[in-house]
Image 1 (cartoon, rainbow, N blue to C red):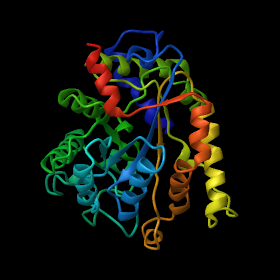
Image 2: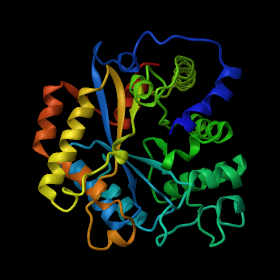
Image 3: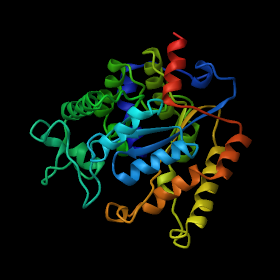
Length: 332
């Protein structure tokens, strides 16, 4: 993740002058001064049946407020049908340029002959961010992103925002440029922490100069009439789950809920997006990925009354990308 943020240096140092962030984007969007505003966001929707069920349950029976969809994956039609029946669901595009699981793969929507640098010897997307950075051109990345957006619109799915699967679009300055440009051109909010970034600074130990450069991109997005995040929490996938709780839902829920309670207590004023991967794992999911306990633990935490109470106790204001865009539009 640190390498992804380092790449921002090269485009922002050239394009933008120095700036300072005195007011949070939450305040700019009309929230009270000092408010802690949070998007509880579920990644990887459409990847599998289990992913769809977990996201839906996290948002309808739990406290999750948003999600994003991996358009090249096989269970997208089922979730889009759900969206049509539940049009208020906050769902964005989880722009996907990698296919990371060994036995469960997908290819580019633009077609492998049109984006040859995005596919491996099997004709699927590369398994890692490094592979994509090494083989794919910015033009191919943009072509695939636009194909995914076009596919969503063809299906009647208008995304509330754009974000990046595995952070691939942050891997090079050129990829990032195309990502930001597509959001601005289509007037779709872009997931990029461009505010105070205190969580990132503390957890990634990034120097002040790099945080300042992130803020320049935030200003660009804001000046393009799009809402901007103040901070991003993207560390839950890396929490190590003790072996003693992996196969015990009661213990797993207690463990993950406590981790999330600790996380929300670390939030600073502003708009923060917290990423998770809520999945209602069945016996099939173990054949897709060994991340089942991580993902099912996220779902258990989001549906835990103890976590809901903690959000209330910490005076956290929950929001969605849809609401942020509505607020930004109202403040032109």
